[in-house]
Length: 240
Image 1: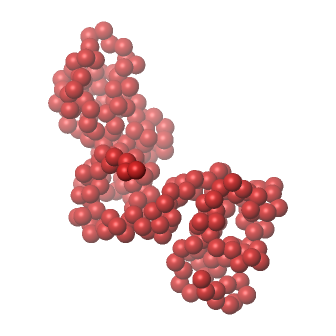
Image 2 (image 1 turned 180 degrees about the vertical axis):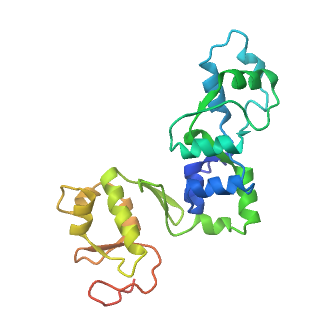
């Protein structure tokens, strides 16, 4: 089954694709390197709460301006991202062109958060091509993750984890950036706050654990991602 292409992506998705942070995206936007938009449905949902007697929502039916992502002012993008997920009141879009809609936003304002911000597929492709980013490399990069590690991508495949599981994955990723990528189960369990005595019990029913990690069968684990001749805990190189 082939799913339809998405026309836009959330900031969290883009951060995972490019292995960047929201602050990185904000920098790109501030320097006119990337256009960040707001979901039009977020605008409409906010305006519907106003219940204005002077507007008929049928007036907007089928209008491309209403149903396509809208650019925001850079100062508003800054305020929204820096709010860390809290709603921010916005009084304008960057390209106002529908008088009745623009007037409502200007008079009443709409509350937007980072969940409402998106980057269009067209803009994503343009940015990647301009900066020489290979889309195939992005699709099959070894490892990318959400800020809380509850959602990770391993060579293009998406994996979901619970809160405790995510803390274990986070530890393994941190270890993978050092010369000691192998971490003992007792350490993983202790630092994740788990009451279990076995890592396998924490990930019971979640096949992703075995798909993205190696085990030495002596209590140590590491992520299945490239490492630079990292040593096994007993100083012997493992070959897989």
